[in-house]
Amino acid sequence: MIVTLSKDSIKITREQDTIFLRNRVKEWATKIGMGLVNQTKLITAASELVRNMLKYAGGGTVDIEIVSKGRENGVKLIFSDKGPGIKDINLAMRDGYTTGRSLGLGLPGTRRLVSEFEIQSVVDEGTTISIIKWKNG
Amino acid sequence: MKNEAVKVIKAKKKYILEQWFQNQLENDGLREDLITNEDQRIQSEELLNSLTASISDNNFDNFQSRDFEKVEEILSGIAIARARRGFSPRETGAYVFSLKTALLKTLSEEISDPKVLYTESMRINSLLDNFSIITFETFIKGREDVILRQTDEITEISTPVIKVWDGILALPIIGTLDSSRTQVVMENLLQEIVETGSSIAILDISGVPAIDTLVAQHLIKTVSATRLMGAECIISGIRPEIAQTVVHLGIDLSEIVTKATLASALKMAFGMIELEVRKKATPKVL
Ligand SMILES: Nc1ncnc2c1ncn2[C@@H]1O[C@H](COP(=O)(O)OP(=O)(O)OP(=O)(O)O)[C@@H](O)[C@H]1O
Ligand SMILES: [Mg+2]
Image (cartoon, rainbow over all chains, first blue to last red):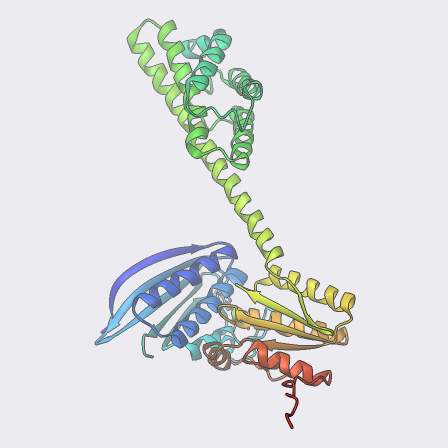
């Protein structure tokens, strides 16, 4: 069972907010004693998802939580936007798939960087992606 | 029914202005170092003129009325100017609040019926409160603009191109490499390559906190642009945690020459232009 220990919420409306979010994530990861490698992976994942949110949905909210499961602590991030949604999630999760003339590595790469990854998306309603990085995960 | 307060405000404009200005002078918020008395008087007069011109029996209790657009515009202008000049929020707030004090004082002198005075004062209160809110909103916006401008300036100054050797340039990048920053880095670098006739550029990213797909793309672009100029680009300062993250993310940097440290990149650069660094031979003692 995953228990939430503390939470915070950050509004994302412009590019500058990503720096704020990254610093916040770093702060929380440091608080639970996450090592440098996992921290960097988590921050990079957050960076990818928040960019997608800005680029494809024009912004949204990020909930940041410290969670625990048994003896393991972790940082959970929930990215929710009310953008156009993703038509074919399987396709979007594929390496190299992009509608934004980019590398198409954001979503599949993020999944590889974190411990748990969950995506929900409804066309015309929005997208919610939640990730967890365990301290030693 | 004619509104008492509107009548008083229109009739006593001059008196109100004097009162207001008196309040401002008494206020410790008056900043003669930032604005002259004369300018402040002109500003205040303009604002009050526009207020007395737009206030009427119809819009008096409706501060959302479009009639007040002009007042709000002047007020916003004043607030933004103050934010840029370095007034504190307290000083800016006191400016509007002292107008409220002047208006209320005048009303209390002119209206004798306590019941009427009370209702009218409440109305003035909410109208002026709304003006205060507008002032604060624009004041903060003005401050944000200042911050954004400073961010731009920091971007400018924090991307120096250093000539480390004849033909070798180094660019230490510190902080986040976003799109606008990349643009600046790239321009500076390409310019410097032309000016110095350098053939090798070392991009040191020891100070970049993370490399995601966007930063990676920016790096790749910078490297390609350098190559188009006929120079070679080495990326140095890739920390272990960044290397691992890049691999998991799936970014292919194999096309790019990378080195762990600036020193090893420099050594490689020397090799590329066929230079050798040797320890000076000590003369043999016979
Ligand atoms: N929040 C979102 N809302 C709507 N569509 C999205 C969202 N996030 C991703 N997508 C869609 O999924 C595709 C794949 O996203 P992904 O992050 O993997 O690649 P990318 O953003 O195109 O490129 P990269 O992240 O490598 O720069 C995007 O091109 C876009 O069409
Ligand atoms: Mg992306």
